Length: 41
Image 1: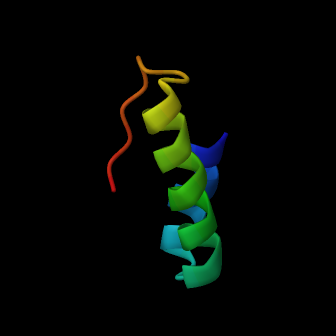
Image 2: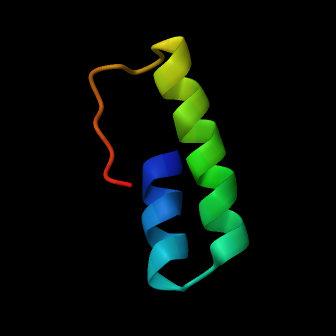
């Protein structure tokens, strides 16, 4: 969900939403939540 939201924000150049999604996805990585999913920063 956050990866799609991040890609949409990136496409629309919504920097605030991109930062929010980056924070959530980084927290997911650190907590090893959905570790099988790879996202491109």
